[in-house]
Amino acid sequence: QVRLVESGGGSVQAGGSLSLSCAVSGVTDGTYCMAWFRQVPGKKREPVAAIYTGDSGTYYRDSVKGRVTISQDNTKRTLYLQMNNLKPEDTAMYYCAAEETEAPPNWGSGGYCYSSTYKYWGQGTQVTVSP
Image 1: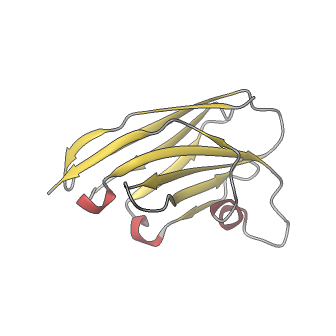
Image 2: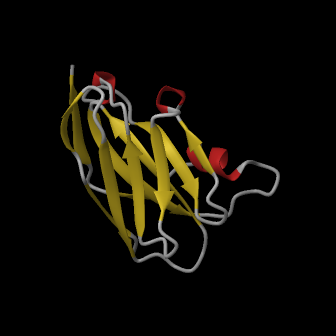
């Protein structure tokens, strides 16, 4: 059973930075899509960034491109989200997610993971950005 535990959330002023981590356990030797999502109360959960463990292909939400970097360690045991130049509209609960899968060879792996559905979820970590 895959288990995901997020950490690193907090409160910052606009323009500041935060680094989120997601400790991953229970994964197999297979390939995974891993992603960060966020949700504001009353709104639908939305993907922020995704990565494919097979080739480290990534994909980002347009509104975070250039400000956010998703990465993983080589063992797939930790997923990271480095967020810089944070804006008040980045305020949300952030969740990491994982799904064991193989990206199709004719589809960009990062984009495939960005649009995938996910079986395993963490409990979330709150990010609050003040003006």
